[in-house]
Length: 414
Ligand SMILES: Cc1cc2nc3c(=O)[nH]c(=O)nc-3n(C[C@H](O)[C@H](O)[C@H](O)COP(=O)(O)O)c2cc1C
Image 1 (cartoon, protein in one colour):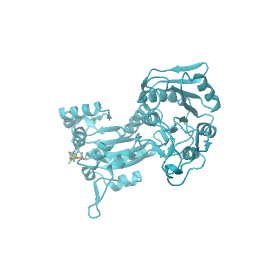
Image 2 (cartoon, rainbow, N blue to C red):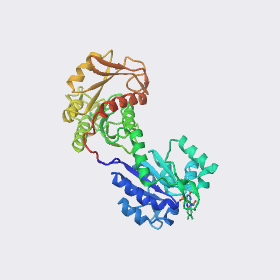
Image 3 (cartoon, rainbow, N blue to C red):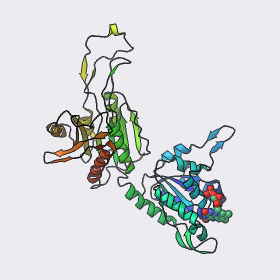
Image 4 (cartoon, rainbow, N blue to C red):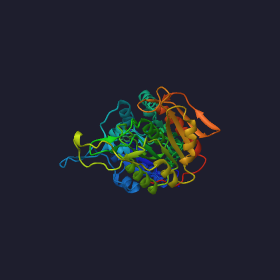
């Protein structure tokens, strides 16, 4: 397994003399297992051809905002920005760095950088005096403040004949720093999660349904937190308007408990998760005979026959690997600890996240939650009321503690 195995890297190449080294950067990244898509500025094409970088990366290189003026086609900068786990700009010219600071969109690369939801890493390359200029220093400072990681240039002989700091870091060092940066930023890189989230809707007829008050907020927060830590997340969501845009999240939207079960089984067949997290508020029962169409009020039956839904959490856990860290959520009316301990065993979970509607600000329809992590009778960790994002971070810390004790269950491909 390469040190960057499975990582998706958008490589931005700009108009520096060091652009010739970007061929070696592509090779280093590809050799380490990364998928690389190259975006060049028009200036970069003066220094190295798209053919070279396209051949080495194995993918078409993009450099213009429009593809075919007559046909009205364009390069989808938003799609490229969302595809990557990181955008690496190597070499990064003074011009592109200032464009990033100002938020300009006058090259395809700058629009990709504006659209990207993923982190950004730059490897500046320029002459000594350009690098030491106050404008460059301030621009790099501003980018660092925004979370951009800067791979410092080397000191040595420059293309201009001057000696000083400004030479782009060698491709091998760029690969090493990027790998190390991923390790710190994305400690769960290579691991996979399967999350069910949101409510389900069980149809009475084509219009009416039985549902519940789950908003899908807590599940979405967990999916995003794990994806930010580098995990690939299969996210199976009942009807919820909460967005989960992240390149690491593969979202499957479903309506009913039966759809959710089928989607979860398909995801399990496709790849073994390292953790399963059942946040979904799955309806326990569904109307036995949903009516096709919309009967008038007077035609509705007095009683609706119900049948039990399958236990999705237990079903997923039975199919998952014994080494998988299995988490279930339980919503209680009161204390709920005894019920959570029963659920732990009955559903073959390693941990139950217990929340209670008795706690003010916890559970459905709130942006906050108060939870206990129930590992067993001797270990129940209680947390304060906090935002659902902060609860997601606590859960991700626990997942991380559990998973980093062993390698990923399978080499994840996407
Ligand atoms: C031979 C030559 C070498 C250059 N090398 C650099 C360089 O190393 N770093 C830099 O910031 N600009 C360099 N430039 C200037 C950039 O090419 C110029 O600022 C351009 O507008 C950059 O556009 P881009 O960032 O969109 O690629 C060089 C120009 C020439 C003609």
